[in-house]
Length: 159
Image (cartoon, rainbow, N blue to C red):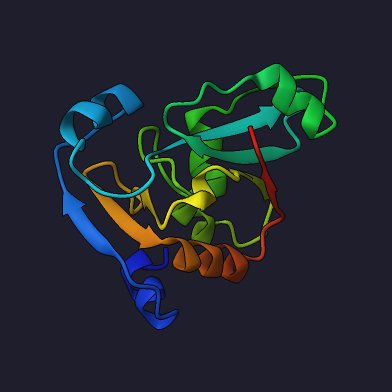
């Protein structure tokens, strides 16, 4: 498994790390990480009904994900949350640690990514570094550079 810090440094992507107790939900994060700068995100790992397509959805923490609308946007009849086993298989992480940085573990580029454009309006974005006991703050340009490096299919839309 690649080291996320080494990769970010090799790509010249700056970041600031904030350590904190484990957080598993946006609500927990709001209480524990309220003073960390940058756009707060909610990351969802979803699958289609057949289980042959997967999406990582990155939206603003305060937004609610409408899975029916998301399904229609990606041409599926239904989307649901993927199992912890699928999360480990495709992104190499456990529930509570979902992050776009886990795309470094998707060597086959099997996961499609949807990023809420509202997040990209911020100068910096918060994300977990493959664990939910820390938060990294990465400048918007660094996030774009990382996503381009990963070569997954990325769709930017306003959700």
